[in-house]
Length: 275
Ligand SMILES: [Zn+2]
Image 1 (cartoon, rainbow, N blue to C red):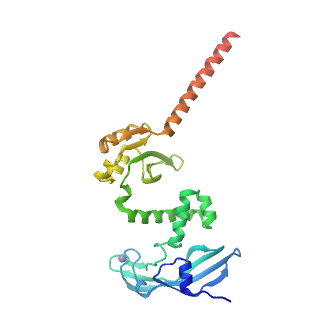
Image 2: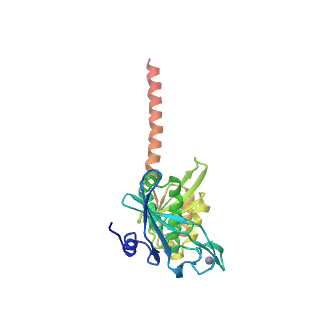
Image 3: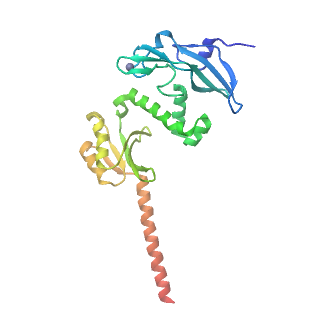
């Protein structure tokens, strides 16, 4: 039977360079699907790092074997297997040691999570869950971990170069809770979200920006709410306030509906009077 070297396997699976890969096992899951399990471990120098700060800690004890789901190998599910130690960090106390292939407290590898998060931007959660073969309840936490990482990487730079933004409020939990969302129209993505709505919440967004970031904003779209006007007037008076198309169409449709009802009532009254 042909074999594949550990180095080649590591490259094929795009695993981090600082890990050791051992001979994979091929088995079956409970549904009869093929599962490839690859035993791995970090390089000796990276085995005792605190998962919170990445600094070396003192070995504390060893946990049992864990498995992390990686991107599928063809049609087979692929799992990385390792028994991580716990380490005592001077600052963070006893934590499970960092592993180079996965985020803290995740049962998926970074690459797997990146793919889930990317797909979630383009497809409904049910489709992501079916295609990636994961529980739909896991999709949200995966996206949160990826987003937290991106935010930490980008820092305040996420708000650099904002030119035209849109703000809207949306409700969830059957209309019991509100959320304010700010989008970057140029890059077509959400840049800020916060629980609650109204002037107090929108102010928090502007307070997060630097002077230069506020000054770069040229257009703010949204509905006709006064709290949008007052925040824009205070924080970026140079920006043009534009009512967004969605609300204009919605108002026009409502108005048309009222007129249609009025005309219909009028016509019925006139018709009855003529009888
Ligand atoms: Zn630490």
